[in-house]
Each structure stands twice: as C-alpha cells, then as structure tokens.
Length: 293
Image (cartoon, rainbow, N blue to C red; front, side):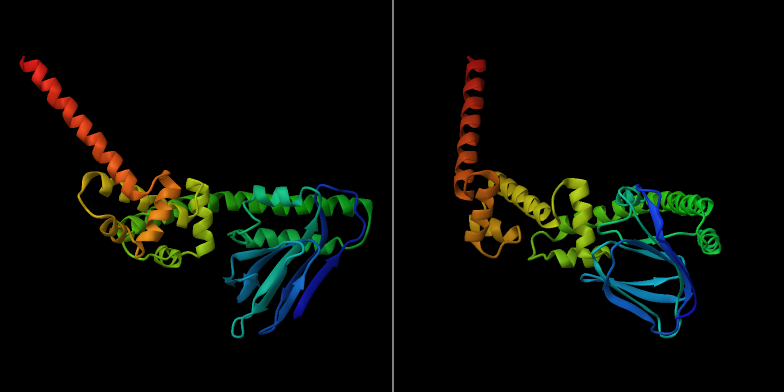
C-alpha cells in the first residue's frame, strides 16, 4: 500500500455510534488484506480503480463508485486489481446502535455492497477527519459529527439507489415467477432460475422470502401441487401422467409431497373431486326435473 493516511482513535465519549479509525489509501497492484476477522464495522468506498471483496462463499468485483461493508467477527478478504489497483477510503466504527443505523441505510446481512455517486463528499469528510488527528474535546465532538455526516451522505444517496433497487427486485421476481410458470413441468433447479434472472441463488431466496414468505423451492412446489390438483380435478389423466406433467419423475415422491401439502394422496383427492362432481350433476338433474314438473 502507498499514500496511506490513517487515523486511530481510543478516547470515546459516545455509545450509540462512534468512530474507531478512518483512512485513505492508493494501493499497489494485488495489495490485499486478510483473510481476517475485525472487531468492528468498516465501510470502504472505492474512489478509483478496481478490486475484489470476498466473504463466506461470495466474491464481488468492485469498481470506482462502489463500496463494501465489513461486519464484526466475520472473516473477509479484499485485494486490489493487478492492472487497475484501487484507491479507497474507509471508516471503522462501532456502537450500540451501529447495526441499526446500517440497517436504516439498507446495509448489513446479505447486502454488503453499495453504490454511491457522491464520492467527493465522502472523501472530503474523511480528509476532514484525518486533519483533526490531535485529541481535544472539540475534535472528539467534531469527529463524531463527521461520522454522522458520512452516514447522512450515504443515506441520501442510497435512498435513490433503494428506489431503483425496488424496481429491479420487482423485475427479478416477475422474471422468476414467469420462468417457473413456463418450466414447472421440467426437473427445474433453483440455480437455473437464478441464472435466468441474473442474480445469485441467495439473493433470489431473499427476494422470495420478502415477497411471498416462501423460499423459491417452496414457491415452485406450491405451484406444481396447485397445478397438479387442477389436472386431477378437470382431466382424466392418470396419477403418473399428472406427476410427469408437473415436473415429478417419481410418482411416489409426488404423492408424498401432494399429501404433505393437501392432506390427502392424489388418488384420494381425485376420487373426492369425482364424487363431488357426480353429486353436483345429480343435484342439477333433479332440479331440472322438478322445474319441468
């Protein structure tokens, strides 16, 4: 790393949210940090260049205008691009309400990457923090205010991103549901749906849980069983044919899932519906006869 400017703080008067450190650095090609676990939150923002950030099983390629969140006690790794190494700034912070404030921004958990068009404002705030690097009571309050200002800039810009993200999320949901409706009769995999939509499987899971309270797999199963019940009710198809038509290669497996969802086996369901239909037809015939009399 080169051209690095770092401020470390130890004296703290605040508990809800407080600055631990901040910095700005122009990195050499392939400069990396980690794998490491940190005790506090850190927000990085890429001013120039590119790099990658990894946590758990996820890896993200980042460029100027994007940032990433490191959460406490979570192992992460990040590395500068070999050809266009990044220049980034960061703020490390903690506090009893730090997680809550991040959630206000829509960050944390599965959403660790963000985009912000106000990099110059963030840079100005961080450099103001770095300039006030001597401990005085006045500077401590100033740094606390600067941290809240940093959050304010992000909040203002991420609200705009959130509106766009909502539109994108709705489009992802529509595409996924459309794909399920058109391909439920095949041995469909959730990874296949995610790939078609253009998002990760984990993000697809998050969207479905938020929209329907179901995982994509549960939604697919419910759709198949609903369609199967319709076919059993309105056609003369065999149980085996209905199972195949709804994406189940194994009739026994289909019957088990059907019973788990509707409380009866497909054969019992079909018999009940046939009996209901016979009674309805008989009732209609009797009513017609009485009217003629």
